[in-house]
Amino acid sequence: MAVSGARQRFTHFLSEAKRCRSRPRPPVPASQVPILFREPYILSGYRPVGQAWSCYVLSLFQRHNESVNVWTHLLAAAALLLRWGAEPPWPAGPPGAPGLPEQPLGLYVGSALCYLCCSVAAHLLQSRSELAHYCLFFLDYVGVAVYQYGCALGHYFYGSEAAWRAGPPGPAFLPGAALLAWLSCAACCFAKSYWRRPYPPARRVCTLIPAGLAYLLISSPLLHRLGAAGPWGPGLRLHAAHMALFLLSVLFFSCPVPERFLPGRCDFLGQGHQVFHVLLALCSFTQLEALLVDARRQGPGAFGEEEVLRACLLLPLVAGCCLLTALLAGRHKHRQLLAESGGGRLGELSLAEVTRD
Ligand SMILES: [Zn+2]
Image (spheres, protein in one colour):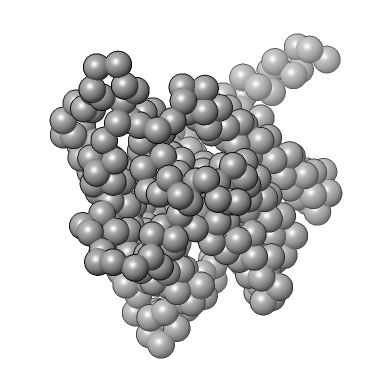
C-alpha cells in the first residue's frame, strides 16, 4: 500500500516537473474556461485552467485579463516599501517623557503590504483550478481584514483626538475593530463559498454590511475631527482625500463599469476592478501621508506601553483567526468540490498542495 502511494507521488512529481518546463499556454475566450472564472462583460484573455503552478507565476509577463490587476498591486507594494524606507528616523520624545509609539505605524504599513501581496497572489494564481480560485480569494479576504485592523491602529494612535479617546467609543474602538475585521473576512468567505455565478444581490448585502460597519467604526476618530469646528489642517485634508478615494473605489468594486457598456473592449485594460485597485492603492498612500503628518503634529505620546502592546498584539490575533476561518472555508470547499466531482481528483490539486504553496 505504502509502496503504491510512494509510486503515485513519484509519478505525480515527475509529471509536475515535466509541466514546469512548459511555458504558459496562450489565453483563451470565456467559453473555454469554467463559469466560476468568467467575469461579467470580459469575453477573452482567460488563462487556461489546470496548468502547472509555474505557468501562472510566469504569466506575470504574459498579456491576459488579470495582468493589470496583478501589476497595479505589485507596483503599489514596491512603491509603499520604498516610501516607508525613505521616511526619516522616528523622532524621540523629550527626556523623561514617553515618545509617540512607532510600532502601530509600522504595523499599519505591514498590513497594507499584506493586503497588496495577498491580492497579487490571488489574481496571479487563481486560474490554476476551482479549489485554488476559492482558497486564494479566501486568502485575499484575510489580507483585507488585516489591513482593516492596521487602519484602526493608525487612526487610533495618530489620527484621534484625546477628547474622542476619552469618550464612549475610545476603549471599545480597537477590540470592536478587531471583531468587525474578522466578521468581514468570515462573511466574505461564506458569501464566496455559498453563492455561485450569477451572484444574487443577497451576496453583496452579506459582504457589505460587516465591511460597512467596520469602515464606519474605523473612520469614527476622523469623522469626529472632520465634524469639529475650525479649519482643516494638512493632515485632516489628507484624511478627507483618502476617505473620498476609498468611497470612489467601493463604487468601482461594486459595479462592473465601464465594461458593462463596452463588453469585450476592456478585456485587457479598463476594467472596473482595475480602477478599484488603483484607487485603493492611492487611498493607502494618502492615508500613510496623513498618518505621518498626524504623528508629527502630535509630538510626545499620551499612551502607556501596556496599551500600545495590547493594541499591537491584537493584529496577529486577527490575522490568526482570519487565517483559520479561511482554512476551514477552504477545507469545506474542498470536500464540496470532491463530492461534486464524484470523489475524483480535483484538477490534480489537493487542499494540502494549496496551503503548502
Ligand atoms: Zn482585486
